[in-house]
Amino acid sequence: MEFLTEYAGFLLKLVTVAIILGLFIAGIASSKGKPKEGGLSISKLNDQYDKMKDALNDELLDKKALKQLAKEKKKALKEASKAEKNNTSEDKARKKVFVLDFDGDIKASALDTMREEITAILSVATEKDEVVIRLESGGGMVHAYGLASSQLQRIKEANVKLTVCVDKVAASGGYMMACVADKIVAAPFAVLGSIGVVAQVPNIHRLLDKSLVDVELHTAGKYKRTLTMLGQNTDEGREKFKQDLEETHVLFKEFVSSQRDVVDIEKIATGDVWYGIKALENQLIDQISTSDSYLVDQYSSSDVFSVKYSVPKKMAERLGLSVLSSLETKVTKWFSALSQHRGI
Image 1 (tube, helix red, strand yellow):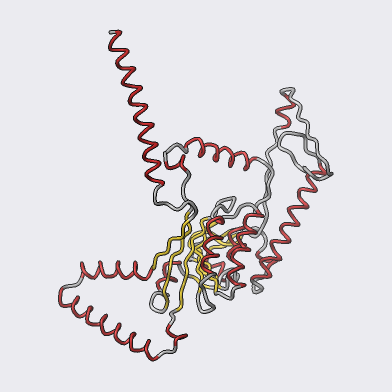
Image 2 (cartoon, helix red, strand yellow; image 1 turned 180 degrees about the horizontal axis):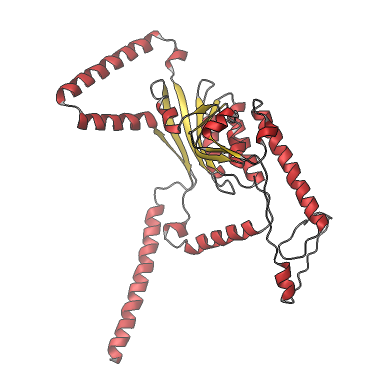
């Protein structure tokens, strides 16, 4: 019995070592051939659309109909080639539409990749081209979404048309980004607006006081800390905090007005939200449509490209050992949500 116990322990150690070595080798293998820095991936959406269309036609049409369809496509290509020869070099270049996706969280984390995508696009885009942002965000931190809006302004400063498509939500900081666009397209039940500022700070001072726990907070500067989570808050601190929120709200309203002068800013800047159809009535958007419909309409006259910038995963993530890192991120987000911050 003692022999079997020792043997089982020996086998367990061997299996453990084998698993560790396997993960290490797999990590090295997965790291080969990958760029050390982020990489740009581009796919032509016209081709994907044509492939899906051809696949359905192959299943649905008989041989005679497919032959006729092939004949019509050949004729169309011939006419297009003939027209291209008669055009000048400037006319030959078709309009290019670059499609980016922005799925925003409270920190606007997607900004890290979007700024790289915009930089790449502006290196080749011309004034006849267009950038389409498929935007989804309920807002978040003021400084993060302010920077995200500034990144979109780079596109307009380069005289490239900017369109924002909202299928689900562009509220608060999300709408701050959307309003920069030359055109805002939203689905009928997309949520837009929420032009306001919000902040919350939980306070557990009474609980600590009851438990005979003292909290000392030392600051240099009268308003370095207006409200605190652990200490006792004052009426003066609350008033200053509210004043800061009002000032941020004024800046938010001024920014929206500067980008969309057609809106009645005092009417819409109440923190309220509107669905797509009502948002159109309030001139928060310019067109009712899904992003899919908007892009499909571009395929016949433009070359449409999806542009994505990806950051390679860290070695720990490749080895499947990122659980602690993920847990740390979750705890940090939870603590950040409890701490003092202003959000839009």
